[in-house]
Length: 126
Image (spheres, rainbow, N blue to C red):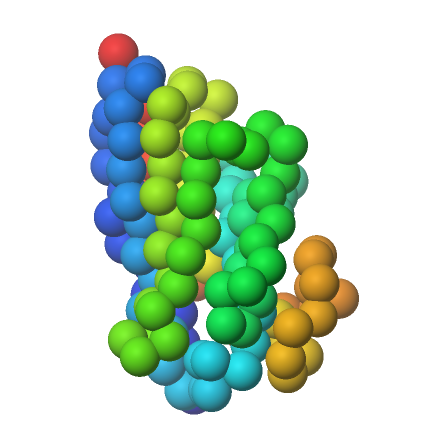
């Protein structure tokens, strides 16, 4: 059973940092591109960042370029999102997912492997 468990969210002041983690199980993690998404109240879920199977290529939404860094540890079946210089508009529930396709496939994925989980709440506020 495919499972993705996000953690690391919280309340942080503007300009602060958070590191999100997503632990995967139930599939061959190292063979799938991984993605981070976010959804703010009243808005659609958006792709924030992506990383290919071996971490050789990454993708970032324009709104987070230069501030967020996605990385992965295939030995630990974990994908990370380091978020720096956080802004109030970064407040959202953050989710991870995997590309349904095997191997590096580009972003955004045409189809996702897992159902959306609970996510982790990030609130940026003073």
